[in-house]
Length: 246
Ligand code: OAD
Image (cartoon, rainbow, N blue to C red; front, side, top):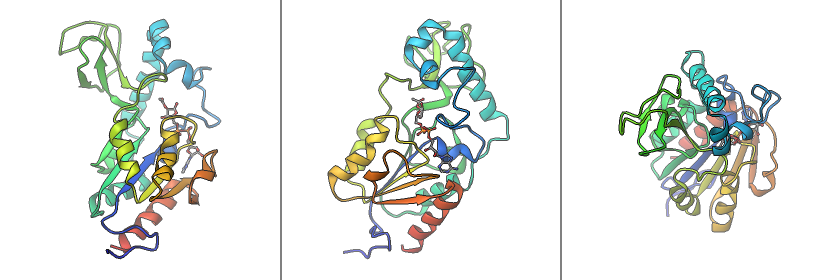
């Protein structure tokens, strides 16, 4: 039987991490449900739906074009929490999966490898006709042409909208069911299915669940432990604890 750490995680154990907008907040990416949660007077839920895209494609494209430009402008960089998770990914001897709800690429830029973008990626576009996914750094417009099938005006952001099925759920649920440690970092616990991940861990009855946030969330009661504070402080501290034990 391998030795366990103070967190009681065996060194060959499985870690699953869920991140939300809060981990990127200190990098300058606004969260969804904070004081500045409205965009041009719209709730995110009103621009991030297939219905909104069908009704007002220019408005929805503008919403994502703005975010893509900001992400590429240079002043948004990975922070110490992204870096710590990349270090954990690189050094943890057991299974590891980072599932992010974020569509920014800050986890990749920090060096994370075992990573799943369950809500898609801002720097990719998808063709509604042929399904091809392309790396995309420019504004998306009605004139944009898919280099796969040559269709014009059929490209949309490669993001998951409300009412659409998140990416990689089967892999996430399988990992959660056999997780020894589950961390939920910077997520408000409002949006399912991610908000239900902690329940999968509890149902499986083996993993320890830790919520890491500026405050206890609506889901706090489902976790074994809370680590309250900015992610740039709490995440490096917890990663150091984990790596010190292996
Ligand atoms: P939210 O904006 O709902 O929640 C962000 C959470 O991060 C809040 O609970 C904050 O308290 C916390 N937070 C803020 N700053 C933090 C910091 N420096 N350190 C630690 N925690 C901090 O964002 P998400 O939970 O990610 O979906 O939202 C989930 C989904 O709702 C998003 O992926 C998006 C959105 O609508 C889609 O677009 C499909």
